[in-house]
Image 1 (cartoon, helix red, strand yellow):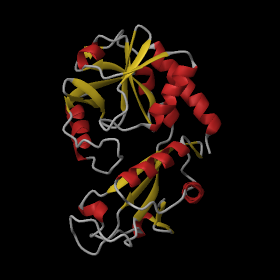
Image 2 (cartoon, rainbow, N blue to C red):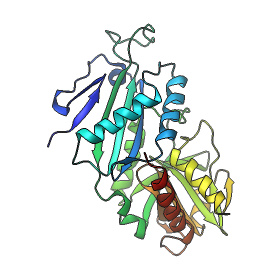
Image 3 (cartoon, rainbow, N blue to C red):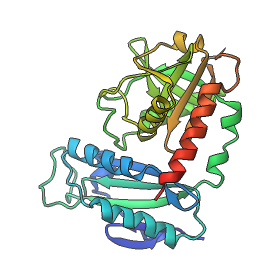
Length: 287
C-alpha cells in the first residue's frame, strides 16, 4: 500500500512527491531534519523535536516555515492518512529550498523552504529484542564537521561508520576525537561506573539529543548519579555498563566495545531500569 506523504502544503501519494534537482537539500546538503517516534499512533517527545528543529533552522539562517501547531496537525494528519502505520517514526526535513540554480551563496530570503514529512513504519518498536541482549560497537575516528549540534542531513560519514560496523559484524560505531568518545553514529552514548552514569557534556561536538535530555532528567528524578564529561574507549571497556539513547531505540544496552566485553557482557541494571522508566513516562505524555 502506498504511503501518503506531505510536501510543501499538500498530502500526496509517495510516488507523486517530487523535489527540484536544484533544491539546496539535494545539491548542498543544506537542510535539517527531525524524526519523532510514534508508538500506538501517538507522538513521543514531540515538543523537544519541534524546539530542536527551530534551533537548527536558526543556526543555518533558514526561515522556519511552520509553527508548532501546524507541525503537530501535519504529524497527526499523516497518522490518520496512513491507517496501517501505528509504530515507527515520522521523518521531517526542511531545506533552504530551490533557488533556481546551484550556487554556494545563500539565495534571497524570499526563496521558500522545502518541507517534507513522511511515515516510517517499524512494527514492534517497543519490543526490540536487542534491548534484552545488548549490542556490540566498534570505534572509528570522528571526521565530521564541528557543528554536530545542528541536526543537518549531512549524514554520509555516519553512514560510512554504520557500514564499517556492519563489516566488523558489530551493530554500531562510536566516534572518537582527541582520544575521547563524542557520540554514536546516530545516538548519544553513556557508560556506568560504580553506579554513576557518565556521558559527554553538551557542546558543538555532539547532537543535543531529545531522548538524552529526557533520560538524564528521569535518571536524576530517580536519584541516580549523573556526571557529564568525556570518556575514553578504555573507560568504556572497563565500565560496569554502557548504553546509548536515540528517538527510535530509546535506551539500548551496549555489551561489547571494540571486541572487549563490558561488565558481564549482558545488559546492566541501570540501562534496563532507565529503559523501563523512559518507556513508562514517555507513554504518559504522548500526543
